[in-house]
Length: 133
Image 1 (cartoon, rainbow, N blue to C red):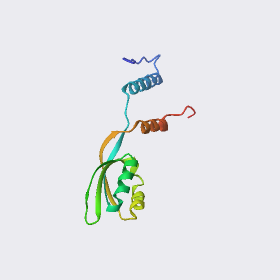
Image 2: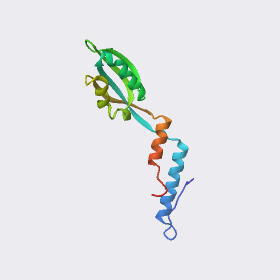
Image 3: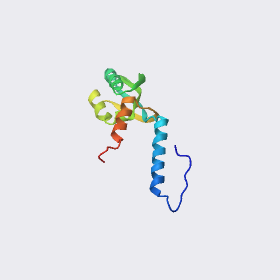
Image 4: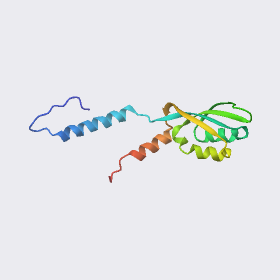
C-alpha cells in the first residue's frame, strides 16, 4: 500500500511515482471486485400473430426476458421484452427472416445490468494485455 509520497530533487524520479500509482490502482481494482455492466434495451416487436412463438423463442435464445404480449390490430401482436443491447446488433435481419419481412420493432436503452460471468470473462480476456505486446 502507498500512503504517502514525497519528492526529493536529488533522488526522486517521476517514473517511480508513476510505477507506484499504477501498482496502487491495480491493487484497488483487484480488491474492489469490479463488475462489468451491459445496456439492456426495452424491445417492442409488432408481428403477425402466427410469428409470436418464433419471436418469443428468439428473444429467450438471446438472453431476453419477455415482459408480455398484447393485441396490436387485426392479426397482429406486440411482444415486449428486455434484451441485452449487444444481442440486437443484427436484429433487423433476424426479424425479417422470422416474419417474412412483416415485423416492426422499436428499442430504447432501459437500464444497465451486470453481464453474465461468461460474458465478463470473455471481455476481460479480450482486453487483457498480452505479454508479447
